[in-house]
Length: 138
Image 1: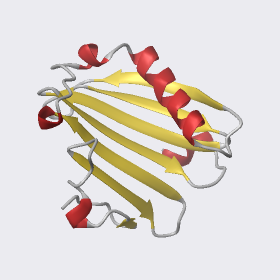
Image 2: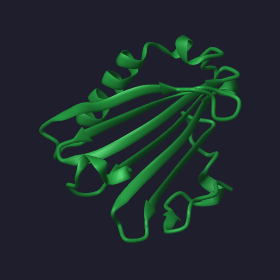
Image 3: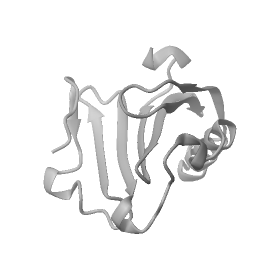
């Protein structure tokens, strides 16, 4: 089962974490106070997708950041705007370096962390449920 930090509750039942047709693992959760939601996805491997061995194989930081924002805007019927606040590549925290993208969808701040390792994409996206300061996730 996917372990969540204190103050968070799983929306995806443990037996459904690996049931996604599109991902090896897909988990959704929300803060107990309803203030934010998250999605953690592991993709690739046996599903036939290959992401390479490093972040460079995934694409440039700018392209990934813009793609995330475009996808969020497309999937949020209430959002009238979205934009990247910051994007950075961080050194390995364990076996792989990763991208961190901070962005806003409407007035709701969000953050995504992405890593590529052994042909798999690891992505964690967290988004505030209501308008908040950009520093919401600091």
